[in-house]
Amino acid sequence: MSALYREDAYLREATGRVTGHTEEGGLIVTPPLFYPTGGGQPGDSGRIDWSGGQLAIATTVRGAEGAPVMVPAEPAPLPPVGAEVVQVLDWERRHRHMRIHTALHLLSVVIPLPVTGGQIGAGKGRLDFHMPEPPADLAALEAALNGLVDRDLAVTEGWITEAELDARPELVKTMSVQPPRGAGRIRLVRIGDGTEQVDLQPCGGTHVARTGEIGTLRIGKVENKGKQNRRVNITLA
Image (cartoon, rainbow, N blue to C red; front, side):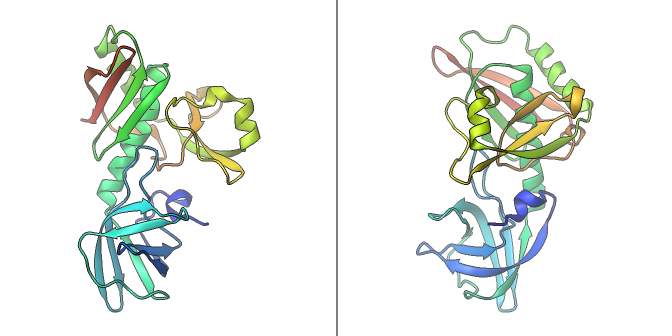
């Protein structure tokens, strides 16, 4: 299925057609512009406009068949199946998700340890690491993280087959979540080109086009989440 959020993360508005309603009152529009919750990234919010009205969307989730399902902010009449609608993103929120998501990829570069969990928010995020001892110098880590941002590295994508990923297990940094399978190919997100490459890993989320767009980052407190796990928090300055 074509997904506009994957084809162009900067697209803020797009037409579509209602292809379904869910029993819970959700709305399915094709092609989807709104990113559905997944991989630690929250679902997009915004609104839907059509000739018969307007509907505020609180979030977007993945439905039983894998299609993004828009969840209305409150119960309301839905545009009928077959209706043409305009999908309008809450762009500021999406863009903050993009900045934080890309920043967390960079955090996994400056802390080269297995990732056991993560979460993305609008302006803040965190990764959990298999890290028996806390970092010795948070200021140095923060400087290294912002150094990667300041290099304004290109963020691009590519695709590999599931078999190719099986042959390169080092690409998967997350211990708790494996890349989705079944489609035959897996999306890779690359940060930096050629000799400038600093990161390459499977990811289905939305990202900024260059690291310089992230802006200054702050590393917050490091939380103890068990004998072998530490949670590292970051925020946009």
